[in-house]
Length: 186
Image 1 (cartoon, rainbow, N blue to C red):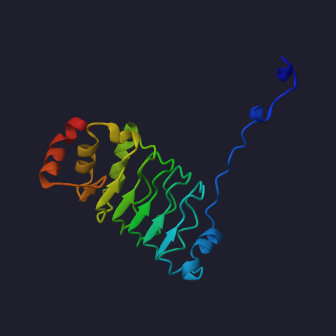
Image 2 (cartoon, rainbow, N blue to C red):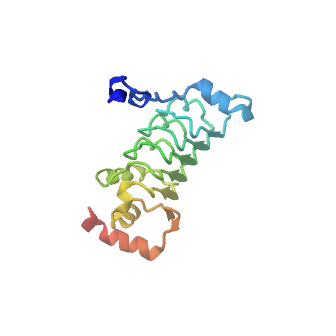
Image 3 (cartoon, rainbow, N blue to C red):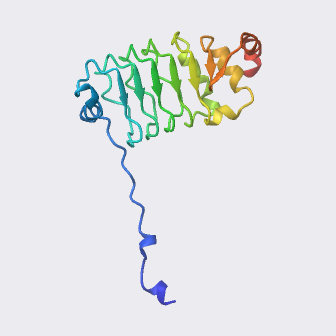
């Protein structure tokens, strides 16, 4: 009785909401110290585990080939359209719910979306990658949609350019079966 009369305890205090970090040009320059802070010819940047809440300010890095953004708070794929030379994008462990806005990434070969929030309803958004003709590897393990038994054949039929899905090689016979199943899976 005495403890309840003493008022609120420290465990009753409201939790402070963590504000996502902004991905600014200054942050990119700081993380590009190996390139003397130069953005124009930067080819690789690691921006993981920084609580970044939005992809922005990377379009000035036109020579970027590798962009590591895993373990942040990113809800959408955006502002990547000028990265024509980007070959590898890692956005694993974020809050992404659909695949979008990667059409401009003409050189994209590997996309890692492991452990995000792409559910079965948004799985059709994988088709937005059809024009990324160089895309060979896609990782979506840990997304709710990957639990569906038709997930692998649906993705393979939708993206004929893939050679690996979730780290497993795509066989010719598997692709043929996937294409035959596509109508039933839709």
